[in-house]
Length: 155
Image 1 (cartoon, one colour):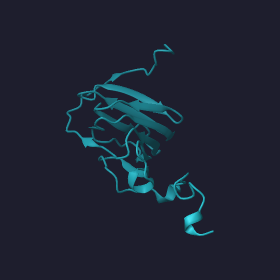
Image 2: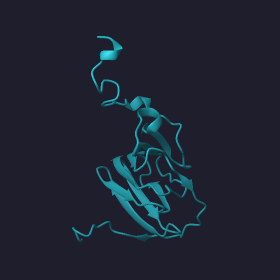
Image 3: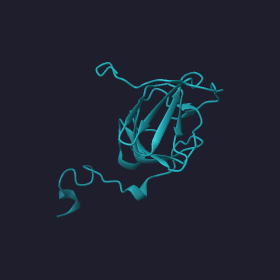
Image 4: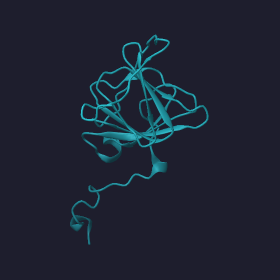
């Protein structure tokens, strides 16, 4: 079969991106290691960005936000402590198997709550490019803990 007669979708259909081929050339925030799996440059994605993030034990990222993008973090391994707000005054924790939603423009910081195990997450954003705006925020000393309860499942 010549190239002109290849089945539709052969090269523009489903793509598998091996985990050992992720691209570290993406926007970074101090304290974390982001790697891109799905974006426009790699697979032609038009509406989403996806990749991984790793944070070393007892480490925390710099404060940042992602502009107009919505972000979802899925905790694969470890314990995440999230801080957010104008002075990072709110805090909640997530464990392996938990999802975290970050609305547009929300200043936030990821913290590995474990003193001896890395935090490994999958990250998905609502556009095909990695928008990261690093912030210079003076955090409050003791953030207010916020229980994550959605309106349907009151706690």
